[in-house]
Image 1 (cartoon, rainbow, N blue to C red):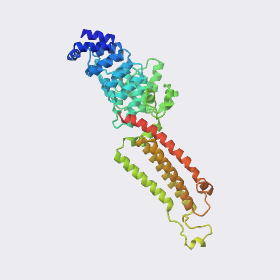
Image 2: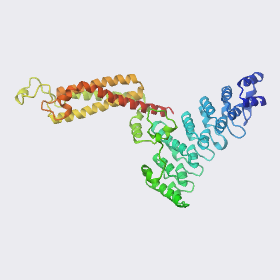
Image 3: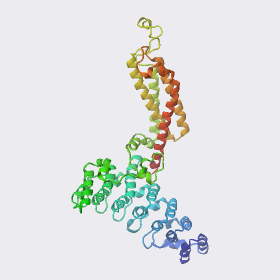
Image 4: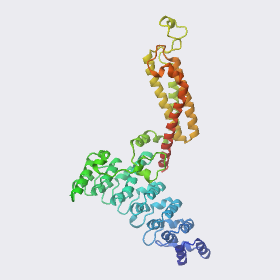
Length: 461
């Protein structure tokens, strides 16, 4: 065993295999001890990635084994700054991020507390979303640790990650916002105790519960109220926090007056990009919230529900198109005597409605047809994720819109039209409407593709 530890220190993979040839049971001896430095622990300290991976493949149980200081190999690699080795170990076993070391700290907790790389925190969350629920011996989650040590970047990622899992995933983790430590303090209590207006703003933005009480029976508001400010700056911070809690975070829109930190310049990152730490730091905009509530939920529907939805949309398209061919009241027949007796401008096949009623009917009918078509394209892109199929449907719907307008031209009442949409000049340009319709469908497809990509990412967790 001592020889193998020396080999691990040097990182010589060939020497490792030589040791195994001489003593095939040498690795098993490490497993027999409860707490011991295995060759994987030593390689993790030294940063010998190839050697560590060789041992990990030979003895996967070493990845979860703790040494005498109650640290696993991934803990040691993290503490010594060997980021690449951490990620390679995680690729072999994603559950390693949940291994509890000294005081119940997992690698996720250490990444929040000591490692200055928010991107690594996000990679942990992506690899094993459940790790955000792990607690220390003091019942502290990663969010509570970030709050207690004012790790603002990590705190912002964790808060908005929890909120986005509520929006995108079948399993919501919103309860983690109000998770209490051994003193029954939530992240909001800690933020109030620290007079940190920015953390309070983030928590209220994600609907953290302000009524939760700690072990002393105090809410976050009462924690703030009972504080005695030390100096004018502390008093200003306290007053800002009180305003946020009283107004439920609405003052967060006026950060310039509250002297809160500005959001970073990458707040405008688009839907289609992969959720890096910068993306997950971004504020959940009204557009994203709206999109997820009304479009993103399509992605997590069952196949049966999607089929029913597509059938309903197809029926609406059929009904609206048929309504143009047979407008309310019908059309003038070819042999109707009133066709010639009332006015010379009235011709057979025209709608019997007056001009204003027909225009109102057509506009509403056309909007229903167009919105139904756009929703159909959106659903097909999100569900199938196929550009070819969706573009083919776009072409067919664009042609159908041109046919719809042509049919409207035929059925327009003979009275001179008052709306531009039924004028003869517009009807002559009907074939040219194909391109604007196609561009509109394509823009919806592109937006749906980005939303679908983002939703799929979270839905797989």
